[in-house]
Length: 321
Image 1 (cartoon, rainbow, N blue to C red):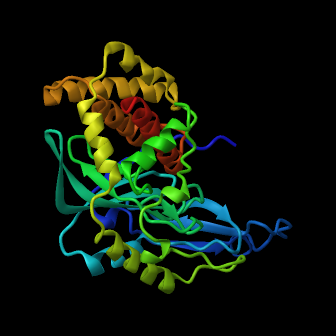
Image 2: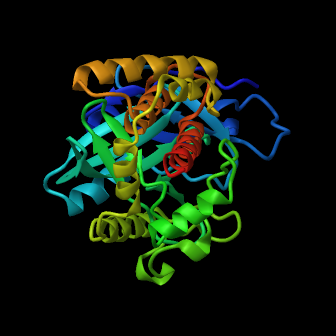
């Protein structure tokens, strides 16, 4: 079945995404029916502001709803000063950027440190923090940054490497366009035991939300104590690497849908004129990121992040060439 096409909407307050959500058994909704199917009998139902009750998905009995309110409570327990930049869809997917006051100069711009948490009620976008899911292997979570010019939330895709040389060596082992987002664990910075880990219970048991909230709080606290990481260095290279008209044409060969490549090209022109600068890998990457997270598409938010990671590595390979 083709996934419903949706355009991510922007929100700046918890109230827009912390609406009631619950599970309803099919047997309770359809008491006059004998339900033969046993694998998926749990309806995930929410009531977004200004909408009727919405069925976001049908899940198995082992599926646990992780409400956005739980994320809100964890964030509020740690931070007194932050801003929210949220991308969400009518299909029940959320990318929540918690934007912190700390700034980082990149070229002539100032980015702000952020934490990106994703969540979903339709089973398409998993709960994650800085791109790490409950099922992720041990490793150091990456960072993320917020760029106000286009309201981009930028994930730290290179942060699992200890040194820039390790990352460049890994890039040389891949052909542009063939990146699968699998960094070498041997290049990971820090010890996996240095930070608390998000854990999913073994088997098909439901997640203990109280325990998960404590894990989330601990991990958010640990992530904010890290120094700014390797991705910031890559951004500096992107800034310094100008592109020619010929190189700009590579937008059409990126592993993204054609219509998104067209929108990225338009965004590149807008930012070039807005900032009064020549085109660079920095502007081109941000143009792709903008298109991925603002355009209508049948891609889930999770799919958009996977493509963003592939594009980042492809641009890095070319910028360092």
